[in-house]
Length: 198
Image (cartoon, rainbow, N blue to C red):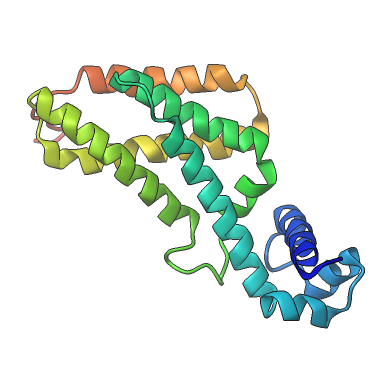
């Protein structure tokens, strides 16, 4: 095996183990054993378990962000909402192991390498789109940041739930997410107030 092929093999094995067991329960020994190599080979390529994990997480984050950003092609805001929700659910279905890795907390993940930071990146993309739409409809564009966080959080948490239950079907889940978000967005009050506070 070439060095590049060995590196890819170790990444595939590490990815599978991190998804199955989590960061803490995965050992360098098990990664090396499954690859049929000695522990020093893993250290040579990644410097340790933390280095391997960081590369796996980085790849998954790029994959998910690229899928969502490239899915945002439709012009109408409802189409964009459908595309974003479907892209996340497609990723969960196609890359279940990757999503499991992203949603697990790890002590080695930096502030720029967590699922939360990925969601913030996605929310920034959505914020720009919402800001334009808010401005065009007479809403305060500064509130686009708040609404983008709410929408992305709603879809992401539902995605985590759906990862385990897988019911209803993916398109139905996306339709319900869009229904809730779109009906809420299309009936926004310009100056909402709590009704239960005196």
